[in-house]
Amino acid sequence: MKVVGFAGYSGAGKTTLLERLIPALKAHGQRVSVVKHAHHRFDIDHPGKDSYRHRQAGAYEVLIASDRRLALMREFESPTPLSVHQLIAELDPGIDWVLVEGFKFSDLFKVEVWRAAAGQPARYPDDQDVMAIATDAPDALPAPTLREVLDLNDAPAIADWLMANQDLFEYRMLKLP
Image 1 (cartoon, rainbow, N blue to C red):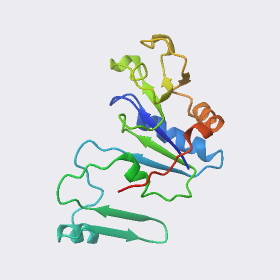
Image 2: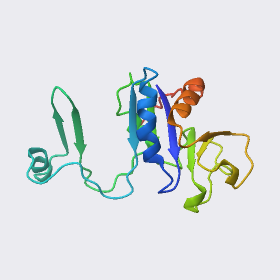
Image 3: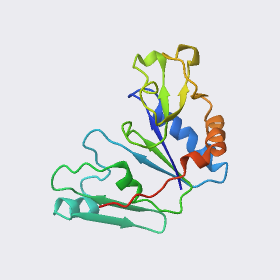
Image 4: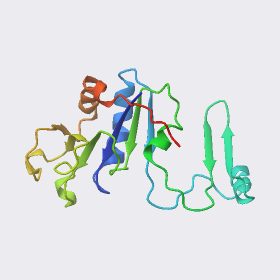
């Protein structure tokens, strides 16, 4: 399994890039999973549905499955920060690529998504785990770099770069507590 993080500030285009990158990697015959960090309370379930009712009744986990999909919801009794490694451990180990959105402070090798128009600082000058920068304004990068500079708007080229450098992103499973 290869794991690559996509880090950048809100509004930089991480989600849009991943939305385009997934089919580009699939065109290479790759199976792709995504781990996304949510900064706030979120819900994928809705009032009135059986699974919602089970969670409201106090179930710690609710697993819903059909012959087309599986969803696992887990309720934490108190705030429980999970590392990106703990989340990756939950995934099917037979996947080819895991694209991680967010977790910009993780120790994963990552692609920084940076837009000059967003007015946010770049991470790559201070983050040794940034392997490449995906940007729509390469001439506006705030600091010189020897890292690969990728066209943010060319997902197939980014997929090609990932495939050409896939050994760099080979994930070594950590032993979790």
